[in-house]
Length: 598
Image (tube, rainbow, N blue to C red; front, top):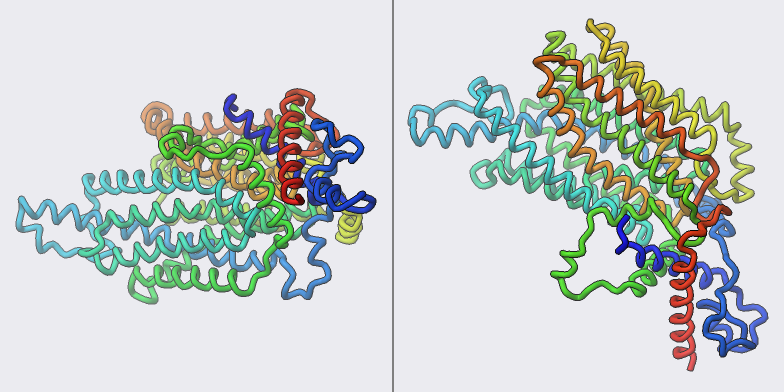
């Protein structure tokens, strides 16, 4: 982290202290109205008013406050937030998004091919009447020139979407802490809805909406966070609804819904297009799914954050901004813009932190990003590699996708809950723990065991890819690697256990930033490695990916259990800076309170 970030950490620490004091200070026993106002914003003894450096109230921890899910216990079921509200809709949305992947690519190929032959017809009038159907098989579009333009177009689109998503995902995650999860989920769904609508216009009216409009669809999806931000906010919603020890299981359900949608979406889409006789029909259905999701989320699904928690998060944010006001000069704002600033949540300083806590957060985030990036970058490489090495057709490739995703869903839906059931006890034991309001205590031994085992299977599976010399052994290796799927939800669950509830959205937003960057960087790097080595040693890319997993597996052994923000393992470094920031915030609030009282 840079030196310029130190004031941000100080302001965050001071704001945290001030908000806790404001929320938890009790007025009982105060001497008069003046003391009540002053004590509410920082607290000091009336016998020492002349001492402007009087200490703040004793440290009040968020652990004294009940967990979010316990605040809804008295509500009827239809007003109580639950992951079971979100999971079915999340699965249907994943199914719709996966279903348009292939039609969208075919549509882009057709539109670029149309533009290509329109340009060529200027010099060769005979090409002007060449028949071309939008979104369907056009043999004349299989030329090298058209393929090159399609590759360049999709590269621009993915870069645009990935970079914008990297910028907006952390901000959307932080906003969800202050204004609720459902509003942000509606924003992400609206972005996907607008993107599909733009693609539909380009398909139906290619003269008025040329193919470059689809780049605008990529941009809108990226600005609204795309599916990466939607996944992060869905995890934040689940975090608010469930006890700590069930997070990895429920996160696993979301990942299972995602991979099931990825596996079934293209097949369902193909049958729908065949029945309807038009590729455009699938985009109408996708738009309908997004509209239904937005209406249900806005009208029926209960919010998982109470108004009080949202207000406390907004108050804390306002104090942070007041401590470090933004520059009014827009040129300075652009000059000082830091894409990686949201990652400061992974490197907290001040009271309640420690070097070991920061190491845990950084290592877990790095391992999670590595796992996500390798899985994203290896998909295209696997398709190209198997076609080159084993002469696979679409049938064999589809079988690989089905086996891999089916195995992953099995491990997420059956194996991961079974592990948690065996090692964490029965539901009534978890409920007893919840009644005792046990705070999250960082990653526990079970979490770390699952993470290390999952990455080990990932490493073993990719080593199998390297050594496979037949189609069957490659398929078996894909099933072994699928066992590593239980690692990603456990990693993200473990990360949320390191921070209090009012930073969950901010943390998962930062993870969304890392995922968005990995989504851009990983496929580019792995495709470049394969392109450079395919002629001499095609298995080189699998060796590289196996080595990456091996490093991540080794890094997981440096994560310590039982650490969390606000724990007993205090950070002694930088304590003076934190104390000074707290003192300045305390004095400012005292003066404001006294002025308001007078």
